[in-house]
Length: 97
Image: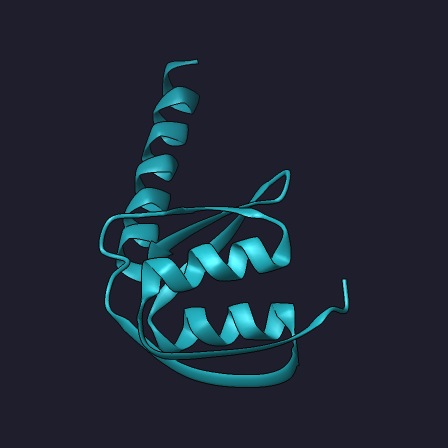
């Protein structure tokens, strides 16, 4: 989708930002533990995916399209921990099968 958006945040809590951005984009979001802090951003007429990507990058977060218009937002460290856990579980299933 090539929707362009204009948004501004001046010290807005990051949870409120992602809630508002998700609503603006017509999707749902789940925020993991550690996703916190103020957001300072002023964006004019940018593609929605570019806005999301910039917010994630600047605030050290990782977003996963969990399917069916659902985003999962985690800290980068938490995302890596979850991926490592999933890898270990998958390896164990392969070893026991």
